[in-house]
Amino acid sequence: MACIKLKNLEQYLQEVDVFENPKVQLEQYATMPHIGARMLHTIQSSFGDIDGKLVADLGCGCGTLSVGAAILGAGLCIGFDIDADALSVFHSNISEFELSNVDAVQCDVAKCLPSRWKKQFDTVIMNPPFGTKNNHGIDMKFLQAALDLATTSVYSLHKTSTREHILAKAAEWGVGAHVLAELRFDLPASYRFHKKLSVDIEVDFVRFWFKPSVKK
Image (cartoon, rainbow, N blue to C red; front, top):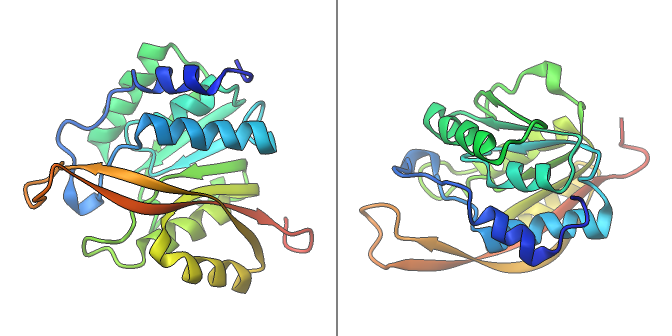
């Protein structure tokens, strides 16, 4: 199914169940099907980084990106998340889609990602917390964890307002970085403190890759 059309991939992702009671402290926002599908389709069609690859999904939540990666032919996709409730939905989605090439690990990605996973994945995909709710800097912790796991590339969403910082850090770490697209992430009113029905957040879809002298 690696050659699946974008519109068909988006249709599949629309069937993925998401959070019923998202947790504000974890910044739980589901990846919208139209964004997830475009991310994954670009990763595969432009770079060939999913089909037959070992893929990690950090902060996998309910599994939208993991399901999409599996549909696109990932050899194995493992989701990592701290929240047992989210992983319960994740496993339910995997069961509903009858996917055998997906699994999940419960852990705190930002603090104690198991060392046995270091450099075990070809590709890491993620929609990390943006660090807007008492979580300042958590997006960078996720990025550091992703770079520890990957041997080839990391694909991630980051607030456009942090672009200069993100690209400067990548350069400091000796990692290539390129903004593949500027997107509008539609955040629905999921929490009681939200005053509007939805808010558009400008986000960058960024590819990070290892330069020859850095790749391990």
